[in-house]
Amino acid sequence: MFDIQPLSKICHLPETRMMEIARTVMEVWTTSIVALPRVKTLDFVEVVAMMAVLDRTGLNTLRLLELGTQHGISAAILARCLGRLGIRPAIVTYDIQSLRHFFEPGEAEFRCEDITDTCGGVLDELDPHVVFLDAHPWHLTLNMTVEARRRNKLIFAHDVSDDLWNERLQGGRLSLEGNETNALIPWERKVLEAVFGPEIHGGHHVTDDYEIDLVRSTYGVALCQPLKGPLAGERKT
Ligand SMILES: C[S@@+](CC[C@H](N)C(=O)[O-])C[C@H]1O[C@@H](n2cnc3c(N)ncnc32)[C@H](O)[C@@H]1O
Image (cartoon, rainbow, N blue to C red):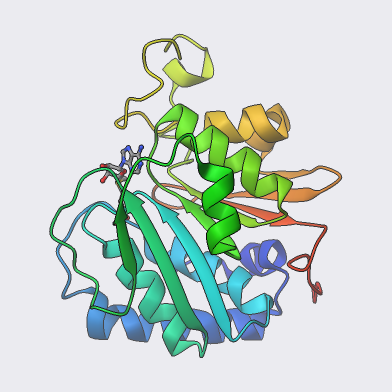
């Protein structure tokens, strides 16, 4: 299905625990996620990787801030998988449009607001353990990444696959100017490059305060794990 060994190394969890997490995610998937509408959202491997990093924190309650709710499918997936792993989720999710949401009441709190210029204040208010970036606009993604890094948060960024990191973005042929607020362009990987350096494209990159791994799944998810602060945690692999 997927190669557990490299994922186990990235997430710093023993392979046996990774397998347990994968089994739990699969159970949730087959019992409740398949019933949700089929839209582009997190894939199975991406969820296993994210759950593994969150499992390693050892937290009983996990505060998660999501940018880009859309139909709330990712919020529902994250809430249900965390719950099944025995971690109580407290998810706040932002979007600038209010669509029909598919998470249950209590699984997430939706806020309809553009927080591009207030990322630091929102982080201070909510004090999330992890920020999940899935909204695209350049300034929003950049401001949130910079502020989250300043506070040693876990940062997960969706849509960073090699396919989405297309040649227009790579060569700088797609100009940032005029596209900053374009929610259809996945700027996440470009933002990670701007914040953590071009070495992120190699797939594994370590700075003095973070390690950044690109999980090469369907859409790709970047796992940015702080090496400082309370979430740095113990590394078992
Ligand atoms: C890729 S979709 C999110 C998918 C969702 N996370 C999932 O997997 O189910 C991107 C969403 O970001 C939202 N978005 C665009 N600009 C935004 C902004 N400034 N703040 C918050 N959300 C924004 C869009 O309206 C869209 O619903």
